[in-house]
Image (cartoon, rainbow, N blue to C red; front, side, top):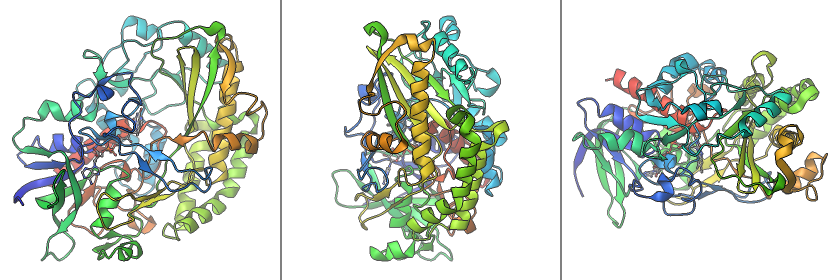
Length: 571
Ligand code: FAD
């Protein structure tokens, strides 16, 4: 065993953890980072800008399994997450889209003082260096508003060098306009609704994926006050013996190929950045959580905080495919996204749908509360749901309700889509006192009527895109699912029979250690400190209290940048 002590010990060298490590090690402080995975700097499954999926089910994919999904077709789903220096940013889709401004403002409305779009925007910008698109790319829709973007941060954002600059862009733009979805010059300025060609996390010069390792760690890896322990799994926190209230003084770890745990000591704080499917488990293994669950595994309760691991929110992703007209083949990178509103998706029915869903919210809240064993409270859930309903259906400034990615690729036009704001909530909990044992993960996909309806109507919207001129001239017949499997004008039930076997997780789990007041089920406060502890914080996707409409990493980098300043301010 070793005896090593640092001012701060960070668990997880992932998307968020490396931001904290970078920013804290700017000061005269000693920092340790504990990471289960290894360097992937030379792994082409990671670096290839168009290599999405290559890393799946390899050694750097945790590939967590859910429980059988009661409402989601009685199937288990795989929740992918990166096990590497850089975390999930090393295996993700590299899409860089943020959130709707009022959706971040909702965090403050929930009681998180200081968290709103205006305070977060400077941190989105601080994290980012936007690489300027070429003239051809600009003409094909790679546009941005300089006031919303940063040009001096660690994370390189840009458009792929093989981006399709053909007339597909103008054809699609005209098609969306015909469907009421207008061009959006910059999807990252807090207003996401519309059609856009989003940028990616990419180093344009090197033509490689820009993951958190490349952005935040390798450029500063030679700092002598920063030590990264790779191939090392955190087991649990160690608590200071003589403290009046729970104070972590280290993390028990196990190096790969060793059976002897040792402790890496922390003199100031321990920061958990193990991801939304990692950090809540470490809290439970350390005695912070629901005493009923902890007792089951003979873990003594250090802090009675029953909502640890609750409030899990994810989305579901389905794909539809068409053949290209004339069997035309496309080779360039797509990057065509649309963020329609509920009005775009439901058309003239939107007011009725809004009223129906509003009337359903008390029943939704009861159902979610009951599923959690009333650990989350129906009255709190009803207030979150009402807030979310407002975001979705408030006509003047509604958030997008779905993401539609459309990619001409080879001889097909591929689409992936997900309803952005399901109401379902699930949970993640330990199923053993042994660190690293599989957890019980239940996202409750399709638990509520809205979750099914919003996915179904998005599929119908995509069929309308394909049937609308001028884009209709680029596609031939639908091959997935195909009209023989799901006929035009199918009922939701008919469609769901197919969808239940076709969907996957959208890999956006959040809120498992939600930042909210403790009285309404929060796990961390507005400084990201775990309630009931003196010096433990969580900084990763676990703390987002509500799902956001963008892809997650842009917002996680911004949250971690702001968290680093909050930690420094506490010094
Ligand atoms: P992570 O980046 O996952 O970091 C957690 C780290 O902790 C990991 O390195 C892990 O190995 C480590 N760890 C966990 N447990 C332990 C332990 N006990 N001991 C030591 N280390 C531990 N977002 C986008 O913005 N754009 C996209 O295109 C996109 N596509 C996605 C595609 C896929 C397949 C997936 C899975 C996700 C995608 N996302 C995307 C989501 C986004 O990548 C993640 O939400 C984000 O990277 C999570 O960051 P994090 O800091 O919360 O955790």
